[in-house]
Image (tube, rainbow, N blue to C red; front, side, top):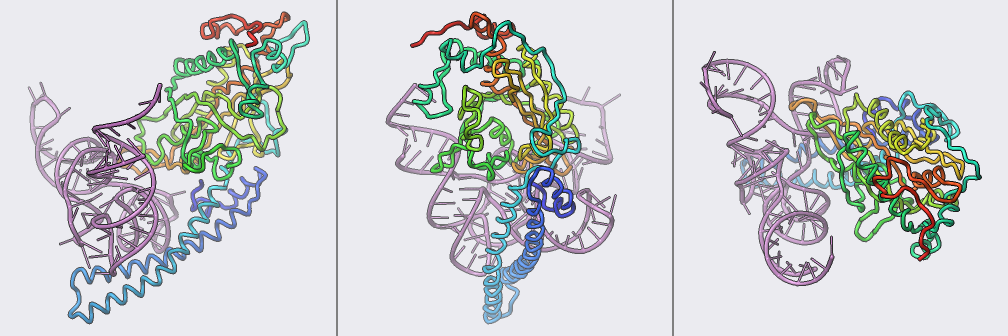
Length: 429
RNA sequence: GGAGAGGUGGCCGAGUGGUCGAAGGCACUCGCCUGCUAAGCGAGCGUGUCGCUUAAUAGGCGACACCACGGGUUCGAAUCCCGUCCUCUCCGCCA
């Protein structure tokens, strides 16, 4: 959510940001117009309240000479009150409207983000690792999974409908091993602190992180109780310090958390239906940072490297893509996607999205800090990135480490976590 | 889920209709004092919005709002009433 005064002072800039995001900039005009009305009304209401307060004060201090005068004062106050009763609802409606408008305006865009329309204009900034070569035709993971009987697609659908699956035997363990590996790696090598979070949150958390009100379609919820399944750990992470003012010496804060993620994926209906690339439920280890505004840019670079380190450790070839303005997410001012090579499906799979949201989420969730004990509170900056998303890493391991005999080798660094070196034909029942 | 108690500023804790944005203590900031083991003295010290001032989204002045949240009573509410949420204690239930 943006600062009204900033928008008023730099409205051309805000319109420009919307344009390069392929969004309609007229929302800014609406905001300006309503804000003008808002200020007028506030002034009106404040002066009425001020009058009213003075009258009450006079009565309280017995500043009247007889009962008639007292009744007169009460009458005056009541008259003002009638005025207020008319104006106040108008103001609160205006404020709701402005808030709704503001909540729907995406973040600004960092200077160095390439201008572009869609993912075709994204820029590959780094590619690392050799793409594996095979003396046979490598299979896509769903084929491998079927051959080895390690994923049960049909029965997953039987339980929960399309886009659900069951992982079996060593594949289930592989996934569990990866989660632990990711967590340990970031805790030990990158100094993140681990959190175990609620997987269900209140609406305000989704507003704070930027999922609501715009992306309600993608969320599972219990509307009766205002309980929402998290689409990413970023949502609870953003809100742990909601409405707090942090002392500067605790910054920067680095957190890592494993959660499942739940998404309806309505927008992507019909896309990526085969295999486990895009399910309604998937696991993810998320990285999150609370940092000083002046450091957020370099913190993003480090965040990306932290995520890349995992792929390096797993010997998986990857590339880093800088998203163009038109492809940026709602809350992000700058984003790097990390994509891993999947040798069977022969495509780059997004396994991480690392973003600097600047003060966008901090404003929404009202998270601030003080530079000195006496200075004014300022909004801090937040960053988030996957470190990493599980299913697609699993896909990459299955496809890149597949052998001619149909078995799957486990990356060296992962073996201490899996307890086995390869996946072979699994039990059927 | 049932019964009871309670939610006040960074923390603790007063405050049951007007003099309360809120006593007192702690913490913190600035200054003074003091050579001695978390000493003393003085001052300051919540957040937001609106207006004026300002180069300033720094500072100053003023107004308004905020004592969990939302509504109500009243000329006037932290204080009374209603609803919601949350915390604690006891009981029940349960991995």
